[in-house]
Image (cartoon, rainbow, N blue to C red; front, side, top):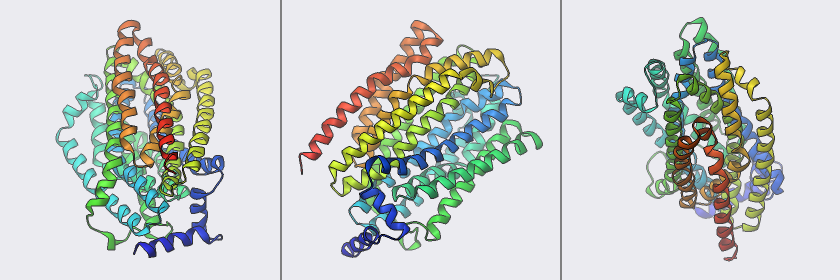
Length: 465
C-alpha cells in the first residue's frame, strides 16, 4: 500500500500540466520567496476577511450608539478564541501530519487523517456547546462582564456557543485544505462567509431589531457558509485528498500524531485567551468606556495579527513538506524568506495604523472619549507588530515539523513568564498606559529567545545530513 501511495504522490510531482502538480511543485521546489508569497498571501488575505467578521460586527453594533453593547461584543471575543483554540487541535495537528505525510508520499495516511479530523471536530464542538450553555452565566462573569455589560455579553456568547461546530469547522477545514496546498479554495470559503456576514449584519441588527444578538446570528450564518464550501471542495473531488466514508473510524496512531502537535498548540491559544482575560479584567477597573476602547483597538490590531498569522499558517505546509522530504537547506531558506516578508508587511501596518489611529477608532464609536482612549491604546498595541510576526513564524515551524513542545516552550515564556507578569507590573506602575505597552515590552524579549532556539534546532537537523 505504501508503495502505491508513493507512486500516486510522485505522479503529482512529475506531471507538469495538471493543477495538482502546481500545488506539489510549490511545496517542493518553488523559489523560497515566491513560494512563501504564493502560499502565505492567499491565507493572509483570507484571514483578513475573518477579521471582517469582528470588525463588521463592531462597526454595526457601534451604529447603535450604545457603548455597553460594543463592550459586550468585545468581552465575548475570547469565546471565539477558545473555539479556534480547540479546533486548532485538528486544524494545526492534522494539517501538520497531512503535510508531512504528503512530503513522505503517504497519501492514504493523509486521507485517513482528514476523516479523523472531521470526526474530532464534530465531537468537540458538541461538547463545547453543551458545557458552555449549561454554565453560561459563570462563563460570562469570567469574561469580565459587569452589571451594565452582563446581559449583552450573555446574549452574544450564547449564540456563538450554539453555532460552535460551524465556527470550529470553518477554521479547521480551512487549515486542512491549506495543508495540501489548496490555499485558494480555503481563501474563497472565508471570503464567502465574510461577505454573507456583511450582508446579514444590518438585516438582523437593524431591520429585524435584534441588535447585538443579530450580529452574533449573522456571524454564525457566515461560518455555516464557509464550512459548507470547505466540505463541498472535499466531497466534489477538487482537493488532492478525499473525504471518503471508507476512512470513517478511529486510528490510534493518527490520533496520537494529531494530538502531538494539536494539544500544545491549543494550550498556546488558551494561554493567549487567559492573557486577554487578565487584560480585560484590568481594563474593566478603569470603567466600561475603557473596555469599549480596548475592544475597538483589539479588533483593529487583529488586522495586523491575522496578516502575520496568515503568512505563518500558509507557510506551515511548506515547512512540513520539506521536513518530511529531509530538504533542510530549503527549509532554512523558506524560514528566512517568511520572516523577512512578514516583518516588512507588519512595519507598514504599524506605520499606517499609528498615523491614522483616531480616524480608525472613529469608525466604530461617536463618543469622543472612547475615540481618544482607543487611539492611544491602538498606538501602544501596534508596537508589537515588528516582533510578534517572527515569533509566530518560529512557532509554526516547530508545529509543522512535529516538534510542538518547542513551540509550547515559546508560548510559556511569552504568555506566563513575560506577558501576564508585565501586565500586572506595568499596570501597577504606570496605570492604563503601562497596561497597553506590556505586550510590546514582552515581544521584544520573546523574539530573541525564539530565534535563538530555532537556530540551534536547525543546526542539529542539518548535522544529520
